[in-house]
Length: 386
Ligand code: PLP
Image 1 (cartoon, helix red, strand yellow):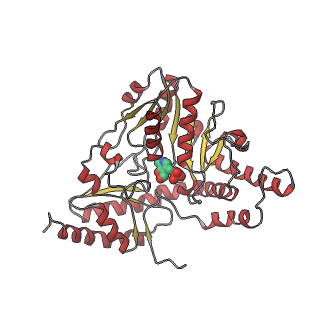
Image 2 (tube, rainbow, N blue to C red):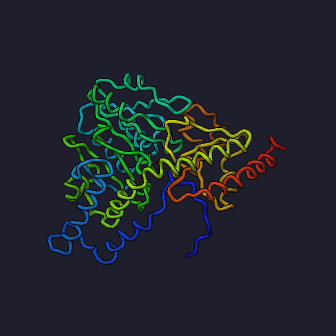
């Protein structure tokens, strides 16, 4: 199957599996396919590789290997953390933000239907969270606070370390959805002092279908997926060995790539963003310039629908998106941009570029050469432009 050239700017949706990661996982599909829980050598040797991968992923976030639970995805990790906090505490209140990923928001909607009280904290027009408001929202009956680290649509960062400190003072458990952080931000769970942290391997150049939940030692944990005794009895289901090995290798590479992402990728993102804002009238950024992920740029284009822009970009081989891949296709404007006070029209005219380690200046210049013409063409053909 040959693939036409693509210019990939959707790394917050998913990332290319690194060739080094493919090489690391293939033996676990071809030769070492035993069950790691089996007692004979053929199974046990797989278990040893599993332990090695667990240690590598633990090193990425400065955790102990026993604090890790492998899951099927970031969504499962988020659901599991919140579920555990709510069933192990007598309290029935949960505090989160209005701009979380649907992996969190939809779970909260379900919790509300089941009788839990959920507070969705608002954000400012630049996407920032008011920490005093957060502190006031934590009541004696709050079981858990869940606040994402990096917003997948705008890249805006929340101060998770300060939020963890507030939760500690208030005696409330704290979970952070850090799915967009690895490879882009240094993650140190000891320094952050969080109780739960979610990751997803496909955002850092490993395959889809493998996630991670960090649970701080001594924090009570109630499994969400109940079955066999895997993951020390905390997540039933035979381990996805090849994917866990891949996650381990990707974790090693992510640590090595961190400075590249923060210098070269950031410079490419800024070249793209500044180039677009300079060349296209009526273009503007959504969300604060800083603090922000080094790879993400969310831009609005007055008077044009994102759907049309994305279609013409696609025809030119450019992959970008109008927000979360999980909600793309829905006719509703982005809940993140809406929570930031954007009008429905602005939210519908916004697109996200998210860069990654495989992007080059050639890719950026290709977009800069094509996008102004695309916007001009759409404006000329819209009823307002004619
Ligand atoms: N949380 C955030 C911030 C995300 O960006 C995503 C995926 O885009 C998820 C959670 C869900 O991760 P997964 O696709 O592994 O379920």
